[in-house]
Length: 271
Image 1: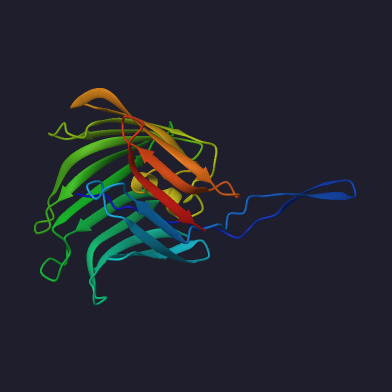
Image 2 (image 1 turned 45 degrees about the vertical axis):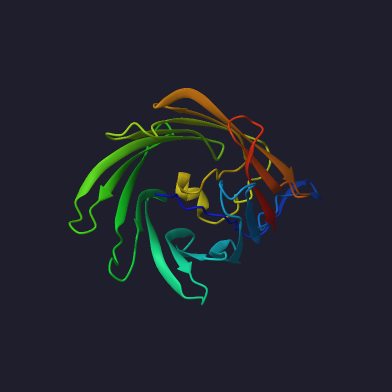
């Protein structure tokens, strides 16, 4: 199944801190964390690689409410400052919305514990056709391991499908390990390297708790991915370059194929 793309940003109020020395106070500049991308556009060099699309995002404060493009709409639900649900709808030419994906998140001690993903939702299959449950364990060494279960939509019987492990540093995912049960395709390790600039999604309230749910989300921007798979052990390297705006956020993102020359897609942001 395709993994959802989540294309947004949100944040808290601008903070100001001060330090004092005797009778003198000097304002210490702080980061403006209210900067949010209003639109995010994906641009592909050919239709064989993808369909161009532009998403428009709406917010209340730091909370992302929705993202809308030509034929889909995604709605987020919060409880306090955490995201508890994500729903995706298809939109036809008359504007009719039909829900077909539902993702629910549960937390334990302020950390993501379970993710339940349902797709193929319809009037005939209100509970979805394909259901997975991911259970996360936050380990003492700082890594996060998880188990993925497939759930039969009729019997609710759970079957283990795979496991994984996530390693973070300074708010960035630096290593991802995947092991699919009974199927070597897709098994492997991805190692991520980052720049020192601000990720366009870093200010979204609640996004940091969703772990690898949001592709390449972190404090900074991915510039290199080294991927090694069990079915193709020779490492593949994927590079990304950025053009930044005056605030240090990406205005344009260009992703290259494994040869380091062929453009796979570009992303443009407006804030």
